Amino acid sequence: MLPELETAQNLLKFLHHQAKNQLKGLDKEGLNWTPPGVEATNSIYGLAVHIAWSQVAFAAAVAKEKLRLEVAGLDEGGSVFKLNGTSAEEAIALLRQAAETTNQVFEKLTEEHLTAETTLPGGGKGHGRSWVQLMIMHSGEHVGHMSLTRQLYDYSRQHRD
Figure 1 (cartoon, one colour):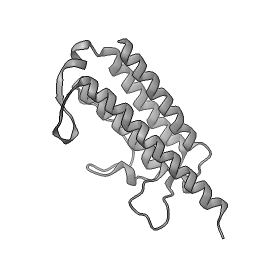
Figure 2 (cartoon, rainbow, N blue to C red):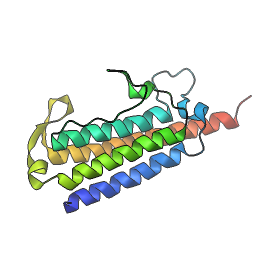
Figure 3 (cartoon, rainbow, N blue to C red):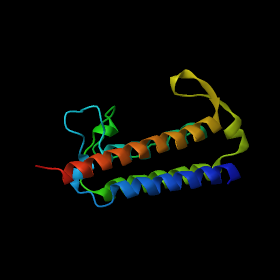
């Protein structure tokens, strides 16, 4: 594996660890909770599934392969954010699958993959490294969302009437 991909792999491993920490101890209610009256927010479960789903999509883009994370209950064109989970283990298993898939892709990537020009979301041009960078930034952003949602959920449980 290229040294820079080992670094990326370590960063993703750290982010997955943080995501799993947000899932720990949550029951079905906690996994699927969103702040009352704020429909646009996402549940901790939805965020975890999105991190896993997106990571595989980014890995597929940089490798120029067709890869897809199979997510139970997701209809074609459906939103991973709106899925409801029944256990933290479901989300952790998806994160584990995403990590395994990404690691397999990283093992195969060459310097040519990382320097090849590609089109990024929004139409911008970049190179394969851009996909790897975006994968890390995107995962980090959503781990932060998970943390904030967990804090709000824990607060709401402590202050129930």
